[in-house]
Length: 141
Image 1 (cartoon, rainbow, N blue to C red):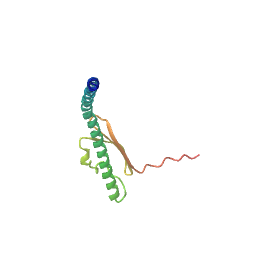
Image 2: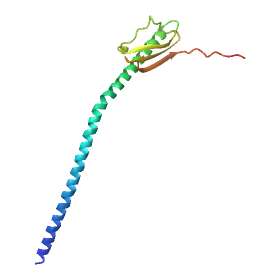
Image 3: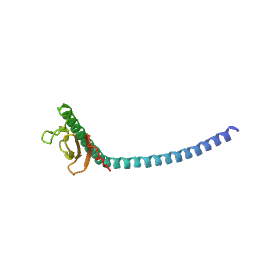
Image 4: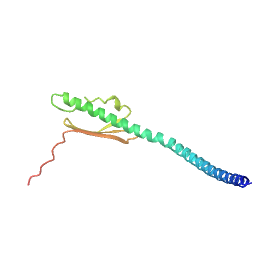
C-alpha cells in the first residue's frame, strides 16, 4: 500500500510539470513568432533601402575611378613630356572610365590642374589636383 501514494504523487507531479512545460513552450513559440515577424520587417526595409544606397556607392566609385584614371593620364603625359608640363585641353583625351560622367576643370595650366568629376545631375563625385602650385606672393615692407 505504500506504493500507491508514491505512484499517485508522481502522476500528479508529472501532470504539473507537463502543464508548466506546455506553458513555457507556448511562451517560447509566441516569442519566436514575434522575432520572425521582426526579421521579416527588417528584411523588407533592407530590400527597399539597399538598391538606392548601392546605386549611390556605385556612382561615387565610378566618379573616383574616372578621377584616378584621368590623373594617371595627366601624370604620364607630364613625365613623358620634354618640358615637364601637363597636356593642353586639345591634347587631353578623357579615359574610358569617364564615360557618362562630366569632368569640370577648376584650374588648368602647364604646371598644375584641379578638376572635379560630376554625375549627370551635377553632383560632385570626386575632385583631384596635381602639379606645383605657384608660390604665394611675398609682401615686402
